[in-house]
Length: 300
Length: 187
Image (tube, rainbow over all chains, first blue to last red; front, side, top):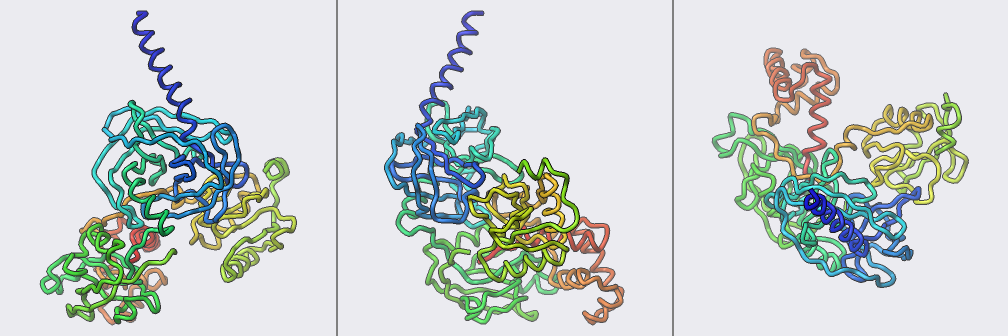
């Protein structure tokens, strides 16, 4: 009996020690109405936050561990991977972050900022650790990490640790309130690019597209059952310059079928800018090929 | 906040401060507010509620209805594309001390690129028929507009109902616009 009780006490004490130590890993990012969200103290002068929940402005107030209030400026944001970085006016203590590997069923400890310089803690499990995925904004996320953890809005953007104290990633909300983590590997990949340019360059054609079924009569010549119909064309954009029209159905980009959206997203990475791309499309019942030059997407 | 909760719910015309960085949006939103029968007041004037296009100023102490703002803890959170009736309903509700959310903002969150189930994809012709349904046209009028037979129109409408899982025309239009919002991609 006493042994079991001791194990539980040990478990509890270990968690409390971790949470206490983790307060250096988070900062509070102040919002309107006395509220805040959490940021990760990534480096002594760099804070990583959840892009989707960070208001679109340049200057923020940060509450660091211990309660010191600092100012910070946006240094870059990438909606594609939901990563934003802030540069602090003064350095703060930041823990060294070791990347951990998420395993389904493993214990996960999510840390948030309490807004006054302390930390809040959430315990749960890695509900699912899966393969890489593409976000609806076109970014590549290295792994799917779904957490079985309750998270308050103010705790979003904090680090998620495994039992060994390694960092699985940054907590954030997926659709329908699902709590997910942006993997540490993704943050490590994106932060240097954001520090350099302030954004992640992506290729752009200047079209809005919707998946449609290829009409039966054209399936044979199209050689596929679905395509992306052009719903609108941005004036002066690359597609407009190439003569792409609303109503065209794009079948492939440089030979990659538009049947799977994620395969197409891959075609528009930062390396695509300036490249000539052949678009095979259906217009007025005929399959034709139009060449465009991929430009750089500017912030929406 | 305590004002809104403590006082009896304001009825009739409300004083609404419209906050929008974009001048055109401010004009459009001000018109929506005025046409709903409310007073549009200056940004700093006494107001019952603030209608913010996107994020509102951080120091804002009055109840806020945001259209597409990042702060989901505000009393009113609507999508950027909210219509006039939603905006009117939201500012009234928030003034009465209620919290307002629309389903599409609840659905917001960092998600994966959606791949539409191939069987449910609409054909270009079906999209055309859908656009005429959205205008409230009858089958006869659709046949005339698209220069197809009444029989063909009925065939397309039935196919639309099946693919969208809708039972009425209104439901078909609503479900299709929902899908379009989720699945339109920009390249």
